[in-house]
Image 1: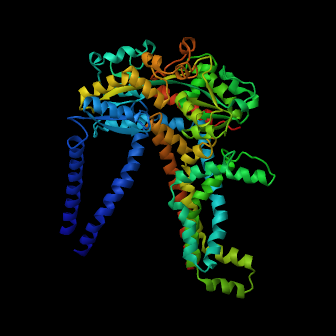
Image 2 (image 1 turned 180 degrees about the vertical axis):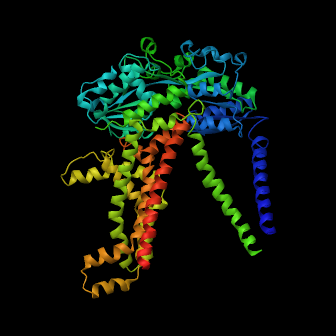
Image 3 (image 1 turned 30 degrees about the horizontal axis):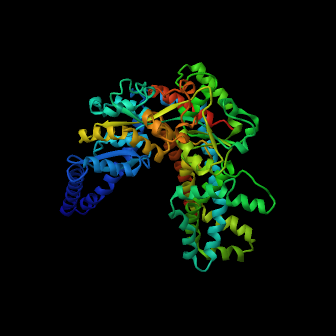
Length: 357
Length: 272
């Protein structure tokens, strides 16, 4: 009996001891304070040489940690156990983090390089004053296609996806906002539309797309499209550039009716300890020369207009990834529609998925 | 004193059951009464009875049924042959071995095999049958699921066959029963418990499959598992996700109850 009780006490003591030790190790023995800076970013989303250069210039040691989804990142920041000085979430995640008071305001006076950012990408709906976030990369949602497999379709219009010749030849990204947005855009509505009649109309139109849809997949879409599994696919521009670097036959286009404009922005989460270092890092990344080098490495579109000027013409002149003003004006950022509407979007998307051929 | 000591040794198990079985189920039940905005409501339950979710439930049950049926059709003969082989444990090990490999890894392997330019299609083309769409069809979904679940079906049936007294078979043959009759009247009824255990071990997880529906079926097959995943990870509508989970728990409990009763009946018959 007594042994048993003693064992329990021991187990509890050990567990609490471990909790204490981990937090101690996290907070003092490495992961913060002093001269370290923890950057929390997507995998392979920065040129490692730039981190080395930043360390050299400032004497700050950078700890680079990665996440693979905005949700995972938000959970970690919410838990608050680990120190993250700079994080790079997408725009909808930023508005959620902001709502939950998990971000610290950014001091613009410490960011002289902010002037290099194209004004088109400042003051957007998810952070109107840019009080909490600074643009890192941006992109669009569009169609990646294999010109050899689609006849003379150009995908200048979303409606080309509905063409009879593409029976069973389309792959879609598994995202409610992206697919519903495509339906709404193809009808000329905003992809942030919340009018029930418009949403039902979009669903009805999407259900007519069903015979053409081969699969609705996640990240695998990159591998599948590059392997020629389908003629056309709805993807993010970032994925498209990755797909196209693997299979050069493919092309990418943003349809003229308009589409989504997405952002990954730098923020300082509540968990930050090294505020000065965080500002230094953000300012460093905004430097035109640094941003240009990073853009060449990552392959996404940079919001830094002076970096764009340095970049070679084959990158900066690529209309697929740097669409002209006219098209950009028709691109929209996803508004935070609130949990209830998002849930409704998702239910409509589920209904679309359940249509049988 | 002894009884008290025994009770004390039960504490760790009780604690385990309460913390990791009862508490989570209660939490699921609790969450199912809240909507996305965190208000108490019964809407989630009303929503479950709309056509979208009912059809999803129906299709979940249909595919789980198909997967169980085909697993049984493959696993029973396999288990039967296993009991006749010389190196039983070696063969058994070979059958169980694939279940040590991560499910996602296996799913990705099948994407490679079944793809338009995959191995299977290359073979089909060489044999003159021509390229067929295999990936993202009902066939590939059921095939891969059956492949994954077969070990769970083989094991209980194999055990039941092993436990069976072989003299009963000899007796049946001596008394003039044909091989088929021996199987139908003697072997199969005696291994029914194993079959049931196997069906349970396959049907219940098959009801809530989710990753394979996307990777292998390209979301052409939507099960309740897919919906739960979406509600928890994408919409953050934990209430609705929990409600679906509650219905799944109820369905599973009902299934267990139904088959459990019959099992007791069978034991009674055997005893008599």
